[in-house]
Amino acid sequence: MAVTTIPTAGIADDAVTIAKASGFGKIGQVLSTTKTDGFSTSSTSVTDVTGLSVSITPTSTSSKVLILVDGNVSESSQTAGGAMKLFRDSTEICKGTNGSASNIGFDNMRRNSGSDESKKFAMNFLDSPSSTSSVTYKISVKVEGGTWYVNRTGSSDNNSLVSTITAIEVLA
Image 1: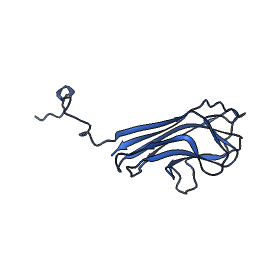
Image 2: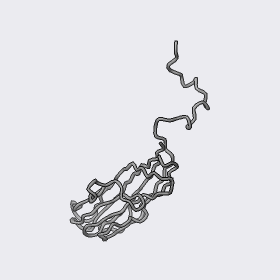
Image 3: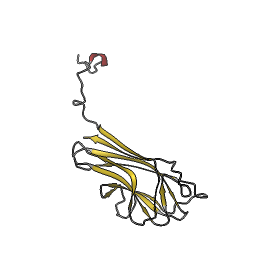
Image 4: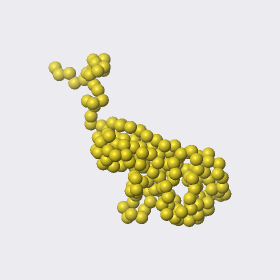
């Protein structure tokens, strides 16, 4: 009679190694940046959010990189529009197919009242950089009107909010 199940107690501690484990994604490395200070821009050009980037060097060209972003944004008026964008080096990724769409667009971010409100922005994207060179993932903003703020509200420079960007290498 064939044995189809081996009890855990019957497996030697050194019999199974990570090198023998396959068939599922393994985590190679996890790098994260936390931005605790504020940022503001009124530029209608795409502008990098200083301090909201992370660099990673994949160990294989077949590795994928999972990007997780969690942040806070506010604006100077109820009619300020714009978008948060995700870049790998100088290439925008995680965007619509028509080329002009933004990955997180806030068209006329309407506040309920006052200027002490911020909105959460979050994204995740599984990238295939096909590289073993260092790549940098960063958040940029494109403002269509008014001033946009990261990690603060429109009326306060009390930088009490936090934003993060995390890169997780998923090995093939």
